[in-house]
Length: 428
Image (cartoon, rainbow, N blue to C red; front, side, top):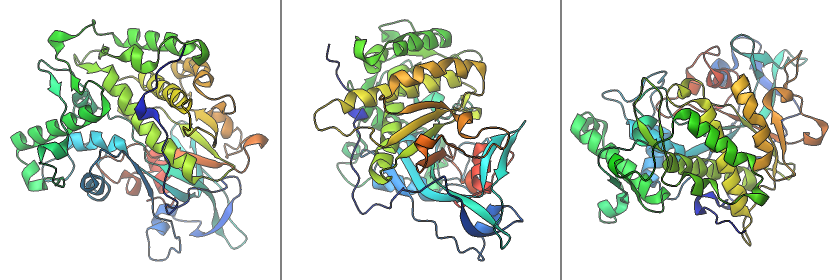
């Protein structure tokens, strides 16, 4: 049986003039970073000789250039636990649209992330001249959907009493270049709510084939509970792709999920899946095009803080569904494939996440290893030590939370994975 593919899952080529993302993550390098204070302090100072290349921006074609520039340049210095605030630049819907704009950069890390009862880093040592050693990695800013509270993703993906009809921003403005409203305009609640709704309409127009979200009164099926959603997705993903009779897109078409208390929101699963597919395809397209022949090791840390309203298990399963859709799209004649991904390493730090790990290999081509992330950083040292078959590959790590603020420049090392990445490297 030939299954249809989702056009959103097609990998895309990148122009040859884009910066390379190739680096050998095994070999430690000399840096000019002193052994004290934390590396970020030095990298941001005038004493640093670090020459981090410009980032690669992997973005969806439907995101206007002006919005890409706005999202990349107008963040707050820090936005830990906060969303849109008066007099700030980025609205909640703009932050949700950041899922379709991912920056990737080759960075130098002077410590490997580790969990030792809290977020920390394992130092890589110093050179003979007393300077820190570093490891070259790719830092990707692919965002987790922000389910920390009810303000961002819960609103963006919600089904409501009225249908939401998709509409392209450019059609709304008569084909003119989209102009991002000013912070002053966004201060007005009614204006900001209407503007955020136009961004939702724009995403729906481009991501869903029917170009609309139904109203709650016209749902074709009863919403699944969170537990039902997990069990349905697990059952679907347990079926090998070679014997599957439907795609994830088909499974979730017209399906919805009712969040658990204290929320009563009902979210569109098809909209959520389309967002996961689009975000992952943007990121993987860049990695496939711009890493070296030795390939890359992709790591995935499920959301924690951003999983307060939608459990991390659902997000992991949607990523698996997106991987399956990428595989399906790669079957088309002339389609790009996941040729350079060498391994997918999943953090399985809880029993429920660990129970999902056996599903991973079923969503990947046979040449890609599925690994527990901890196996790349084995005890007792917890330093990066890939198996021999993966040596020379580029390690891809993530800074998943900077939609509203440049937390990578300000968050403390003990606060989160992103804090460790920021404090111990030059990506900031």
